[in-house]
Image (tube, rainbow, N blue to C red; front, side):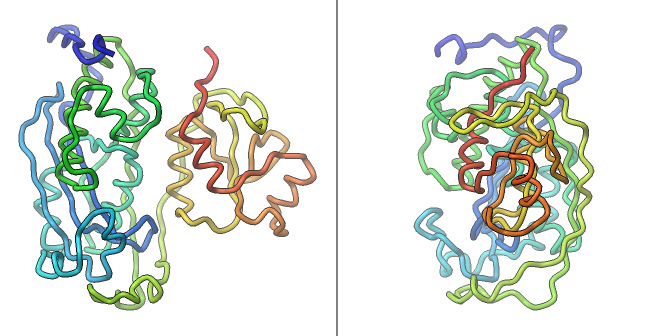
Amino acid sequence: MLEDRTTAAPSATAWPTAYPQGYAVVDVETTGLARDDRIISAAVYRLDARGEVEDHWYTLVNPQRDPGPVWIHGLTSAVLRDAPLFPDVAEEFAARLDGRVLVAHNAVFDWQMIAREYARAEREAPVRQRLCTIALSKALDLPLPNHKLESLAAHFGVVQQRAHHALDDARVLAEAFRPSLLAAAAGDVRLPLHECRPLTEWSDRPTPRIGQQAGYASYRPTSWRPSRKRPACPHPNPGRYEAGKRLKQGMRVAFSGDTSVERDLLEDRAVEAGLHVATSLSRLTSLLVTNDPDSGTSKVVKARQFGTPVVDEAAFGQLLADVEPADG
């Protein structure tokens, strides 16, 4: 909508004092989506407090393993072979992030990938808060057909030149974030900021070298020790999920069994959508997410006893894309 694209910037005195003083708009391309996948390229656009571009930076990264879905990101083993390792770019990357809010489209994914790479390098990423532009577009109630980056870009008239290229995706997001930020400031909208906690990782065996097509098969999960304490959900529980309807903010969601996307990532996505992640299942639980509804885990057994609705991971991912706001 035209009025959204041309939102006038608030005056200096009207600018919300609680807003951050700077942003790092980030995009990373990776070998895959799992916890043991690696970053193969990264881009950062640094923005000032009002979303104006200060500078940008881009690098390839040698993942020391198979590059994954080349048909998506276009980065082959040959292209990445002479690229720097992540520890070689970690300091420069950190300088771009330091003191800024990390902004990304589906920010929890980018943050998790970045945090893991720093953990492997025995360092800590200097990020304390992140902002997801999907969550921001929902807070602004933008009339988007879906939550893809291309839809957000089209809404603000931003032309995407090379989808799934980290530098162009970061540019597109930076150009779409500025009018979003201005609209939020003009409407005194609270920014959906989330705390970032560093992760620590240990690996018991060397990773497969770049170019080895058997890389995926020879990987195994590593040990993690992140803190999972979460703030209380700000929304009341609206009750149980009903099949065919939307999830609603405040619903209590529990998870059981293995998932293809790591559990922490799923839980973070649920929290950012306004859901309450429950560690146990009770009569108050709105929904159980499990890929094995016939298993005998305690949560699945209790779900049967209480009549708690059950969906698999894929269905839950679709439901997360359109969560109904809480009442009031």
